[in-house]
Image 1 (cartoon, helix red, strand yellow):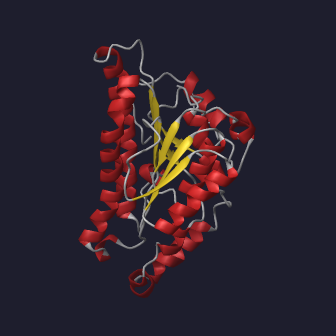
Image 2 (tube, one colour):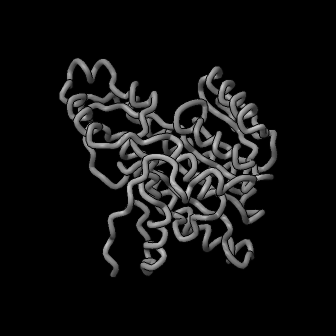
Image 3 (cartoon, one colour):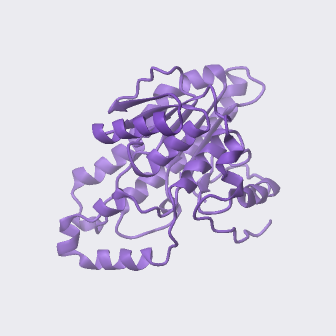
Length: 293
């Protein structure tokens, strides 16, 4: 068994995900990106559009959705529509589904409100799985498509103060791995295709500083558990400054079919994807996979 090497850390654009690699690569494709009004989702939507895709922008804030849509129309000169709290596409069947909407609250579990805790699970597990249930049938009929779930390294680590977030990310990462295995079987045995043409991934985008990080510390945590804030600030200082463009163009890399061999896995966008892929392809794939590993 090959030992796991130390992969190169990537904080921004690097050769494998350079935008020049993907000019026109997604022309004719329709992408739906949830949580794309701002932050990482916005960067993903723009990268897809710059690569030729028509993009459906969704989010909970009308102003942000409208602004991102206008930015794509202007910067990428492509097709885009903005939808608030709806997923119906007027651009045609979805070829690329990226479930990016998320939330987080740093707070000791014993202090959390049960309803608020479960809302995290609903937003980051129930919503993306139910959206997948809606979109997947047309992908199966055509035997083509890419599905990407924004997860986190927290899916494979016991990080304190974010039990709801970590449980949700573990669940969606596991779901991605299971769905990929099911499709590998069903597309051949049930739908009669020679092989499965639908790729499913989960990604760790990196510790990108977004508005989510600013709102993750409620007043209750600041007042009753200041040690949580101190702990997370110390952890944050250990990380380099990751840019949103890194996960954005990693998603384009995966959506253009270059992630062969990484299907069903948690892809760490902060590590050189070509190095990771080379390692994965030379290690025998286990009979029972572990997407959270």
